[in-house]
Image (cartoon, rainbow, N blue to C red):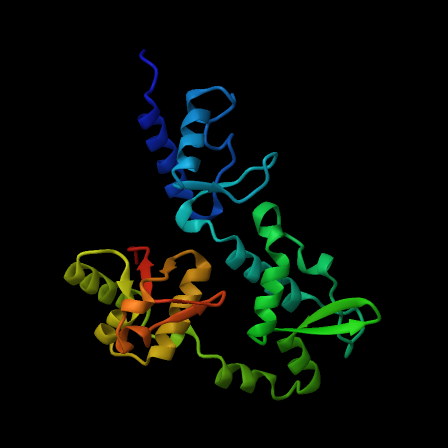
Length: 253
């Protein structure tokens, strides 16, 4: 049997990574055991072409398609989860979290982004920081609300946090996305155009898209701010200090 060509091996790797999505695969999971094999050469070529990337470490690799390579966003989710789920053993006492506490579950490229993620969460008002001597500690803002106003916390959650449930549902959003994509002829569509087709409040659509982005079901792109109209700019979602005007949804219900 003739050996597989480099291009064929690359297609196999891309196919496997597409199947697993954001969870990614190790080299062994990709069927690569020998550093000098055709699979290893194909993987290296895909990295150089920025088709795939390693979210893990050189020793504990976790390869994903480039659309899922979002170490900062993943770090934000993990850090927030660590902070929110932390519970003190003493009722009525907040547990102050160190950086080591915040980085639990973060490895490789994601771990490198923990400090930046914590800074971003502080700016969003989801994380609060306290100083004790020379040390800095963090707590989740919702844990503070629950401690100070336990009887009001559920009401605050419902009224202050617009959620994806306020959008007409993912199937309807996908239907609108398909219509806009077909009309415009490309997959990265303007968030403004999607909102115009759906006819829902922009704030609700943005909340939905941010949630989808964190789940790995939507990819936000910058677009060209300088050439965009005011209408297009109204759909901008700011991530990490930059306005993202475009979105690409995973086209599956």
